[in-house]
Length: 451
Ligand code: SAH
Ligand code: SF4
Ligand code: F3S
Image (cartoon, rainbow, N blue to C red):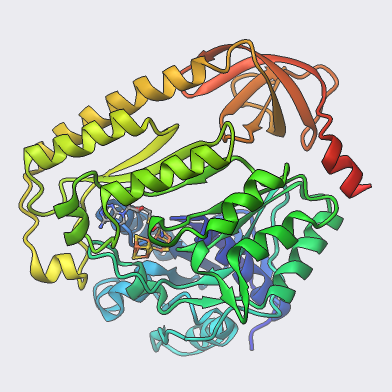
């Protein structure tokens, strides 16, 4: 195949796509390609795309327009490949309507990329790799990460839940879990090269299952890897949250006290239509159990407004539930119809756009207030922060997250990225906390285990 091409990759969508981009980099470098930081000196441009809502698609269409122009004026051959969920979802439609695309490859076909690139440079045929696999977990591929404090680690791929609004089961196929030995080896090597935090990823992480080994056990062994100061995971599904996981979080100081638990809607008729398979009552019971077992836990969520047939009264139920549950933060989305899903086939997208806007504005306002009130309670407390970066607006400061995922900013002094620092919180503004470092964090139990 053609050797030594410079490849530039752009990533859209969720953390799973970020992780996949690092897998793709590894596969390409292994096959002799070079990675490029800029589209301007690249011979191959790859977009790793998302399909979750229509605006994810729109971004890519706009980007393709620019790439079309870039290709037209370039003196050398540029190959454009579309990877990820939109490739899988739109298939031939994308190739038929966009000349500038040379090939498309879905999330389970990345091992074929070197061949796809070579073929599309040698022939004018459009390449297509869209097979979904029941077993591909990219075992043996060592992701090339760009560094930092946190590393994403996919522990499972695909989703079997078939929530009626969601395209993911169609773009990423059936659920499959990675061999725990491979995961552990990856985490150990991450600790060795200096990563402080790992975030275990899956569309539904708590359905992780490798032989008799479930998600709670996986989190426990990952937390015991020396040098890993923090373990996070996302996202668990409320329908089957494993009880032992709560004990693992409560019992391990380095498993963060933060759970992202997508509610989606606060009304049982809507939840049923969404095929979420839990009720608002069982969700609230789970929240109580989580709060009862893990002191100081933060719970965040995802909400969709304007799901087909959602009435004003049903939306009010969601509003009231959010007011009562008091999530630490929430990602709130307007329903976006996805082709091929149950909701698209059986229900009409009948909530008018103005109504969706009105509902989302209300919920965002409510959540801002609640987030502000919860964060205000941190003032006067000392919290442990894992330093992640220098804020763009303030080079004299450092910022990082509390265990509960609050962004925290404090004067740099002698601290540096990667440190675990105790910060005394002086004020809160918006979703951020501001304070002053009082020293390195002394997590006694953790130091003993790691030392
Ligand atoms: N697997 C994760 C969700 C991944 S998608 C989970 O179940 O927790 C992230 C969020 O996008 C979802 O929780 C949902 O709130 C939102 N989402 C998914 N499909 C959507 C659609 N068609 N329209 C609007 N929001 C959607
Ligand atoms: Fe989509 Fe539901 Fe699977 Fe999450 S659990 S990825 S919302 S189908
Ligand atoms: Fe992620 Fe978007 Fe695919 S959210 S799983 S990249 S549809």
